[in-house]
Image (cartoon, rainbow, N blue to C red):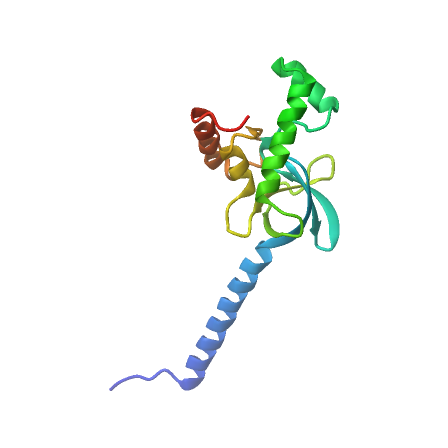
Length: 174
């Protein structure tokens, strides 16, 4: 004799299954944060509208030259042996490269790592362009940034190290 699962159990199973699928979909959606680009501050920082608020977003794990003759530019000049004018010219090139990739008013996806803010209150994140490419990876591949990784924000370190080595081997960028 064939046993039958009662109709009530079948309905309950499908209802619970539906709720589980819905929960997974909502969870995945909640992890995808979006922002609107207001402008490119420099090669490694964007001004964005995030959750209705203007924020500075620092791209995790890279450092581009400064485009203004500030204290960090002076420090970089001293460290590298380059003059201040060369450092700021490189910073302007890095910022110009970023502006070719991301446009004012563009919606981008943000991925956070362990820390969401730095000690200066700037958001820390990975930015994904509308076509799915990661902005930081494109900057590194183009040779416009050095890697600057600070644990615990190391989610994509190997990926960026590969891009950095490729840019150096092919003498791309700065």
